Image (cartoon, rainbow, N blue to C red; front, side, top):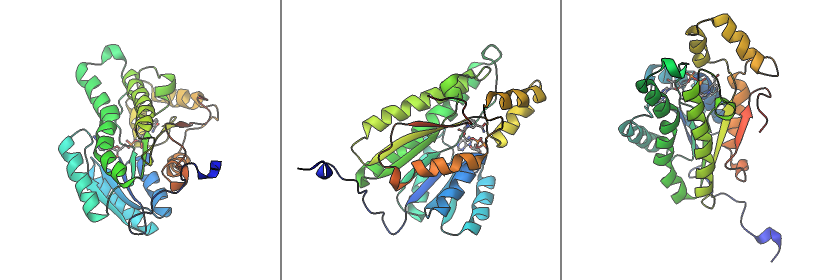
Length: 266
Ligand SMILES: NC(=O)c1ccc[n+]([C@@H]2O[C@H](COP(=O)([O-])OP(=O)(O)OC[C@H]3O[C@@H](n4cnc5c(N)ncnc54)[C@H](O)[C@@H]3O)[C@@H](O)[C@H]2O)c1
């Protein structure tokens, strides 16, 4: 036996002639750019988002790229919504080969000023939501012997961010979940990875700045936290997510890749 004959590098061929991706949070700043990148790479893409109106508008805008793009109403904090949305994607596009979880919600609050309702909403949206969608797609991926799952976490989960303790906890939980899941499905053809953005110019960041006690100071401190001296843009993030979601990345799993202008180097 030669080393070349140990294991196989060939993923099973896609059903039909393309892979199918669900981008949860696909109507958001990062999600939309990721959806566009996947479409350009030839995947059929479903945009799933709680903001159905925006999801529909994004899907319409992305039809300019060509290929197949649809939108579905999806709330990752509700099991019935997840089941219904996934059923709709599978019926219209086929089984889901790629899950990108880019759905999230963030209002910065110091722990002392926050209450349990806020803690629950932060954790349910930013940690449990991603677990819920993963749980829903994973069995099918294992049965078909192929899957790519990419969660968007954040540098708060690696370094900790003041006044964002709940987001830091959710992101840190996602990073640990990804490592454990990667180990659990290591021999099933399914990879599970994580993308960790730094401050990135999206509607979420606009909202954080809008509600900050001192908006100018917040922008300056966000920029100052990035060694490259600028905010990230969704177009900095999308190509790296698309790589992790590609067939060629089949030997990469359990990783967290920071795309943050050098903020963390773990
Ligand atoms: N922008 C940043 O600075 C930054 C930094 C680190 C991490 N992140 C993470 O990146 C991901 C994408 O964020 P973004 O900056 O594109 O934000 P965004 O607000 O532009 O997009 C988030 C999307 O998620 C959707 N969403 C919220 N709750 C949902 C739910 N329950 N079910 C389904 N969809 C839901 C929103 O409608 C929105 O379209 C988030 O997980 C966020 O925490 C962002």
